Length: 316
Ligand SMILES: NC(=O)c1cnc(N)c2cc(Br)sc12
Image 1 (spheres, rainbow, N blue to C red):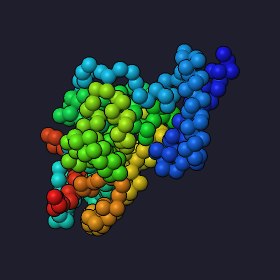
Image 2 (cartoon, helix red, strand yellow):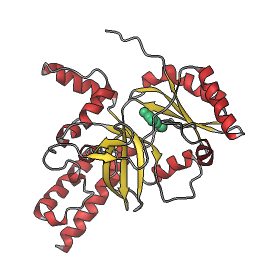
Image 3 (cartoon, rainbow, N blue to C red):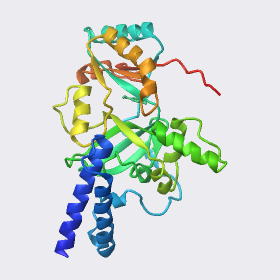
Image 4 (cartoon, rainbow, N blue to C red):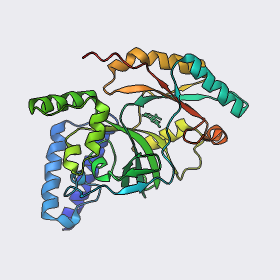
């Protein structure tokens, strides 16, 4: 029994590390066959010793029976929405308002605006305990059973910290095309776009459906967190990465609004090369102290805006 317990713990940790390298870092260090062989060994050991199964075992990503209904979840920290800017001049207007509010020039951080479904993830002492949709910003739906099936969401953080993080769950373009090909073959209604496909997949009561949809996620903000040493948004993104969470590699600091405008305009064409859809760029004041000073309007932060790309001509 001690042997089995030791081997199960060893396999669980090894498989979780391999999954982290593959799904979070996009840098696998072992071939798929190695992962599959170890996973088969773990499944056999867990079947022989179910009481030794670990909560963060990769075999526990797809839970039990489908839910009867969704539980409502109240967000302690409301999930924000963003004001919009549609061109360079409106970005300059945003910058003027920010400088008026701060009394100094801020530094900015630019992040791709992922076209998916905003979700919140709660970790307690490092364990993934709750995941929910944004809903109306204060009340969302509990979709923990579906988010557990996303391989780039760690079931356990690298440190036993308690924190809430927010991000965008999305369906990569390739998964979207494969899914719609299957739907067309089965003469079912295809999804209009990857955002609808991701939302449709995560709003299922049966986690086996979400598990089959190859969803992914980028974390873009941290709610209440224990580490008071964080003073910038960019620092909090690095902290999220250190905890084992997946963040977007294209995020970039900008010294002033002209650099922000340059970044936004550079992605107008480049975005078609991405493996996922984006519908704009999120621009944030980087200093947490500056964010605190600027605060929120009734529904949006004064320290962020969304630069929206012009709607694309839909070729039918
Ligand atoms: N990086 C970000 O902050 C970010 C990325 N993608 C998105 N769809 C959203 C939405 C809000 Br609200 S923030 C944000």
